[in-house]
Length: 171
Picture 1 (tube, rainbow, N blue to C red):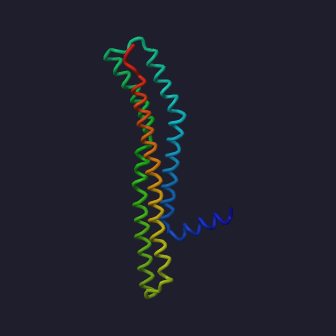
Picture 2 (cartoon, helix red, strand yellow):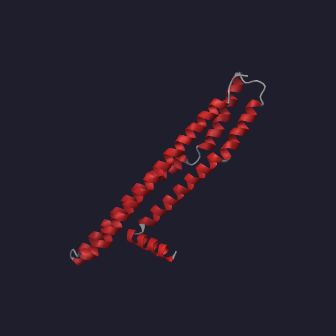
Picture 3 (cartoon, rainbow, N blue to C red):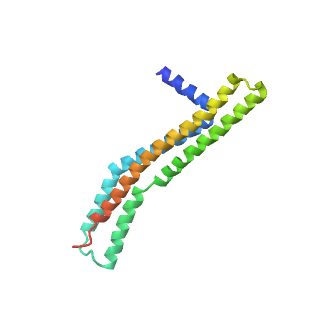
């Protein structure tokens, strides 16, 4: 266990301060992704059941008023279903930018090392590491987020279509 902690600390130090922001944003993104998966598999089923029970309990389902009630029920369920998806997409877009910021700050370290050591490769190595690790980390976070977001978005669209099809207009 201690080896893992040391390896993570060494990696974070080599990547520079920006890597902590990338790690934080990635953690928040994945926490929200897991929350959405949990919601879809648990609470969403309850929401659909409640809306369906209310709709099926209505004696009349063909009037203009009934159509508006149906739209409201679908909208309320879909609103809860789509919660945090925009924030997840924002974090997915932010991660490569944070990686780019890490690249820039790492290159500044390389230029400082060149200025003070006259181009000594050993002194420039830390800056090159600080330039490449955040870029890689931002891309890994982004790619994993894109894959998870694609899965969640597909599931949300399927659930929304199911809700629309389930609340029938006929009596």
